[in-house]
Image (spheres, rainbow, N blue to C red):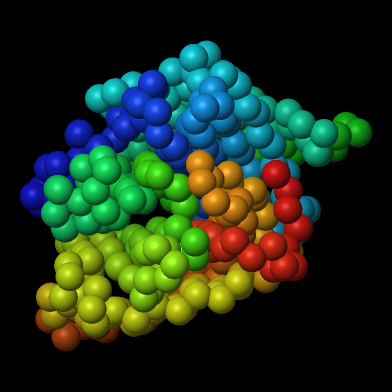
Length: 338
């Protein structure tokens, strides 16, 4: 296990401290993709604090269906009624529970209902600890949005019930769907960001995750910072050192994210894009500042080119990539579901 991964146990439990008197956003999430890219499940448990208002906990779920359309549901409850472990990935909000081993829950809204019971595991690749220095994960120090991926590649098995109303019910059997688990927290969302993850490629044993962001520093937006992470048949590369992030190049539009990068003998080029109909718009509130519009899909098209340190080249594609683009621009043309 790498030194970064060894630091993970202290980074998966809840970071929010009730009564601290400052704004905070935090989430734990799971995604699982049908390997052919037709359907996907995303579930998320969150904390939102904006003093002097009382903090709340939220449960979110989306059944992405390329052919039949998506069902998105959400519940908001008092923070005190939810459960968040301090030393493990183990949370529960309004009956929706998420841990390293299981995701289960049920939510309903005017747009439909979802219920799921999914086993997760075993983990097939090393976790992703995104920042190279442990000090970068200290509360109150930049970067002000933190993230880790405790499970970068696993398999999910179980059942999802998708109720579209009027007796239209699908039952999805998740038979070893590629899955992952993530955790992020901080003072708020970056003003412009993109995050992608894919472990359902047309080659086996590959998981890829990357992010790009610009953050506000006083009256100015910072230059684009981009990091990428590759897990390939038992080996790991993290293009997130200061030197690598100086060389990495990322580009974000409202439907596409692209990057190139190089570090440690590894070269990466990736392009991830989505059609309007495959995207679910979500409102992410911030403790300070405007609402973030998250353009969220788990059905993006992706192309990845790798040149490994030994000279081997890998070119692969997917129709089952996660792509989340965050923007404060409201005129993005995507339907907002939640």
